[in-house]
Length: 543
Image 1 (cartoon, rainbow, N blue to C red):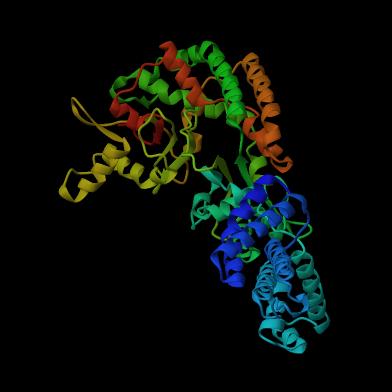
Image 2 (cartoon, rainbow, N blue to C red; image 1 turned 180 degrees about the vertical axis):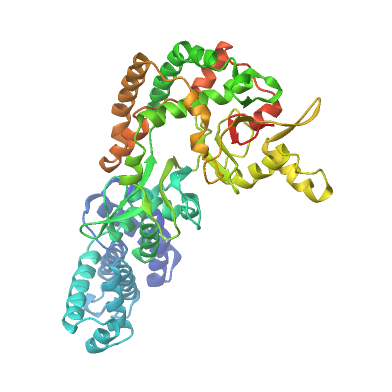
């Protein structure tokens, strides 16, 4: 056994050994001598013994043996008959310890049984139900009850002969950050509403790389299966775990757990791509929209730079959507849920007690909104360059409805509507200019459909965005293939298809914006602009 374990056990039992010695000798000096002998013997055994399933009971047995030798020495030195010596009967301290240890082990192993095994064992042994009663209560044959009892006894015996330690997650639990999703959430909310406890997050992570049974998950977490079973059922019901053959569960969340050095290498590739796009694509984008005033596009204060700040991430999103088949994600990974949701969840792992490190190249989007009665919609992303709240829930459809009323001059500035105006200013949809209030986001005119509504995903700007040249497409794909090869080792095989879909044509819009800003191709934004930037509204009317 390793020295660290031996030192820890001696530190834990040193006071107990002295208490045991004092109870036997009733003399402080003798107790100190006896306790020292016990410690020496126990340490020697701890360094050499292996495969001991009940260390506490074993150590007290050592204490009893050392005490017996100690008494024998004392009797011999005093010339007394060893046969007349009284060491203790069946109710002495050591026997009590053994019984307590065995009882604790038994309770522990009952907790580690499967749900049905545990249910039947409790009914039979603790509630003293007969086999026919249990069979009737659980609506199963008596023979099945007998089999469960037999198999449970076998599992308990095997478990009591083993040391149940904690897996890695029991010693160093992880937590999820940056939880997001692709698809549509239901009435109960998005993934962050469900993956909102450390226990659920660690259960999901435990079954991510290798399918595991409830007992295996519990072992990895160092938690009794009693506390894991219901959480596993909950995660399966909401599409985060899939039940596999052999009663094992596999996680259906795209979890990213890439070490910092590899994340840096991936970012270097992103920057390489961004540099190339800034040279070969951005000038084409500028040329395409230089006459935006003739394209039914409203830009606050006619600031072309502000328009470009929104066009760049929109163009990147458009490229990806054209090259990647998002239906793969929906077909393979999205689960239809009882609350009407259908999405795939994403999460990033954060370890230890460290605070979540800010991710400078993270972005939230694409977010589409359409407001009833349907004559206005929006597209937006959030990045570190804007000052909006970093929550998709804060991007409310109703805000755009009120914006449409404002553009129609149907939102009077009266006391009853002060809260609505405050919200529009806070959200960055309106701002104060030298001429008074103004719409603070890019607006593009869009024709309504036959039903009198518009579809934000059909925003006319998308068709006007210049496509990538074939040369640039090949360049981006080549770099993305390099990223996939580097990243694949950090994802389980069942997530490789999702990885290839996500990274197959991945351009980081934040990285591209940063490069353009560094080169002076884009100018810094004002505080008002940072509230509304990268929000493009489509409407049947312009401000």
